[in-house]
Length: 213
Image 1 (cartoon, rainbow, N blue to C red):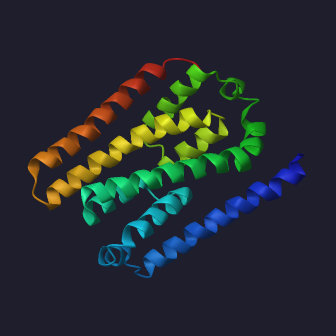
Image 2 (tube, helix red, strand yellow):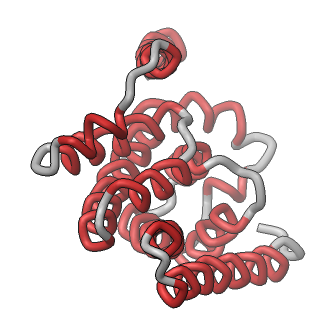
């Protein structure tokens, strides 16, 4: 497909996602109280939360806000189940969008400058996935799209990415729920889970940032 054929596709998807993001921000500014609605509907609430957690991070909403929300609103089993499922679907959609919509237009611009990024073997893909997840300050949404654009194998991408975020989800939910329920031990275990995964990712980042890809 040439540039003229590719441009409307990625531009259309980009504008559509930007529109979804603008609508969500407008609803938030107009006072949409999602927490009250979800808390007052114990049967449908987790499903609504799951849908929001799948869609909103696709347009840049911070994933950590959903972790805290889950801990504030649900019991631990419900929070981890709904959050884990939403992560799985969100990461899959983000990867597919990056691979099918933005990969080729971005590849034409990036590959001449960083050709080795688009010729990674499986071992290098695992390292890059961990490295991207460990880089401080890179938004969750950008991490998913970047790994999809680089063409990291889907199974490898999903296994590493979901495992890392599932630990963060568990840690935050346990910490918040422990504080809410005044359960110091539960809050402590949650904090330790977050600390351990943060330290491990930091060590991986420091180890691999010295290597050229």
